[in-house]
Image 1 (tube, rainbow, N blue to C red):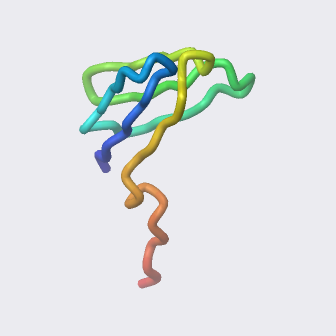
Image 2: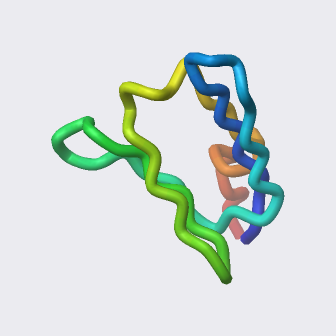
Length: 64
């Protein structure tokens, strides 16, 4: 499944990834990783103001 992830940096610049397949925060909470089929973005958490993503990522699967 592909979805969008929007990252806003502390300097108010924005990164919109429209074809993300995964996004994770490292175990040590130091970096955000956003993966697409062609690229991997590794962003230090210190540079982030906030991030948002398509809510369908968290949608519950219907039984059956």
